[in-house]
Length: 318
Image (cartoon, rainbow, N blue to C red):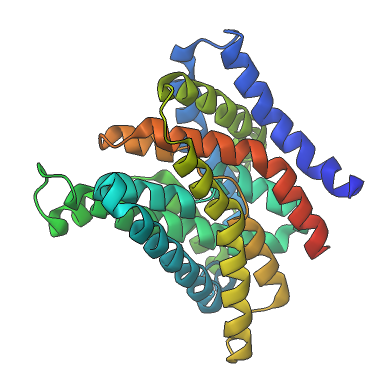
């Protein structure tokens, strides 16, 4: 267990450092959007580009991986919507479903799972990120927009959500890396150096930024009375989601789907990650209850250090 904590603890410590920097006012709140832009538009795309270049495209787009993750995501989204729709309304129920399904696979998952499991974890983890960006997020945002009386219908809501997904630089960096992988070519020397430097900065800056974003979200969350709902959705994210991924994966394997034990381990651990830190920003953009979503992200991140590390120890990867 100590060897596992030796890997996971520094990742969560960087998140805590970012939170502390915000809380102690060492990092001005006005600087947080700039950090986020650097990570989202420069450092993480560079890291994904390099990983995709080194990963066979068959691993990035493995049908068994896609089927397992999409199936479990559909179950979680459907269950959270059914449980919260009447009480919270369709918009807030849709964002609750998104925060219960979308792990922090970009800022935290890719570097953490690769550090724990080795380079073979990159393919399934990147596939998970692509599904959540293009499918899960787009569907939940479209449902939220459809539930808005001022909206323009489900079709337009889905089109707007897909447009936002297409504007995300992470999938495009992955796609470019896949092209290089298929072509069997690399980047020119100076370009490769720049990309490598950016990629090396991705993990520490991304995790520090997650902490700062969580602090800012906490400042705006207020003191609502929906902690029971927050705790329930957090439990879905940290425990129900990975259990569904693991269970569905075993069913698929029994049915003859070629999902390997290593892939299922990566998917299960990805599902056990805390909620994505960008979901409160999306909720705020679409005028949902961003405070509720921020509390779920903060609680899931605080608890995931223990729950995720315990799951790694139980699965015994490596």
